[in-house]
Image (cartoon, rainbow, N blue to C red):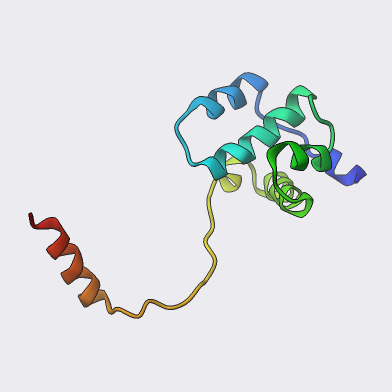
Length: 103
């Protein structure tokens, strides 16, 4: 667990607090909240931060690893799993979209 403390939060507590108050998805807010807690010391470990934010320890460790290696902007990008291929073609999706635009 000592390695997780090697994450040096570059942003100030004020910058992180401002990010917390900007309208973003809940998933992004959780990530910023963890950084804010680690910066302001209400929690000192990824384990305690994971309990407070309600995410698994491995999830919070992954967030911190992304932040450490790629920075805040990369951490705030939401990734989506591959999932199942769409069963509709692009043409069919466009037709549905056009239909939905009509009253």
